[in-house]
Amino acid sequence: MNRIGILGSGRVATVLATRLATAGHDVMIGTRNVAGTSAKWTGPAVTFAAPPQTAREASLIINATPGDTSLERLAALREVLDGKILVDVSNATRRGAEGLPAGLSYPDSSLAEHLQHALPGTRVVKTLNTMLFSVMVNPRGLTHPPTAFLSGNDEGAKATVRQLLHDLGWPPEWIEDLGDISTARGAEALILLVPHLLRGRGFAPFALTVAR
Image (spheres, rainbow, N blue to C red):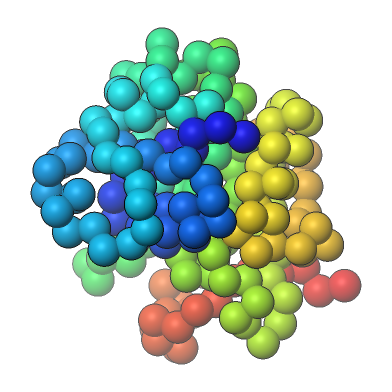
């Protein structure tokens, strides 16, 4: 795995970039505000660039942009994403009055499927969208083993993402391959539980898991 590009500069992008850079990866953060984002950065050494440059220079790209705008943003990068692996960790939802998810943007499909359709030359893999962002890089911090789901059409791409998950701290037995990209519908639908969990438990780390 060569350079990893992360599109986005919010909390999800920050925790992923920090953990991957700490693990020794060459990480580039793609942001529309390069100067502002780099000035605020306090983590390990990473590179900052505009999204098109990040997509062009990285061999694997993580979509950490807001899910409700991801399709438009990434479709504009179709040419430079051709032949790359795109790891989609976002959830595309409509926002309610409290700012929490109020419904799916693609109720009869999934963001991952729409991305794969818009980017036919890109190998899209869905994962890590069924947990609070902090659990993505610290799965052992919970009292019970969480599950990281995988959905994607390309077995080689999923194997690469498995290695990426390993570098983020995920044991192989905690990773569940659901199948092709259409199975992302189930994983993305789990976001509808999140508002109720947050209201009942507060903003505390959580993840969905398959009990074995």
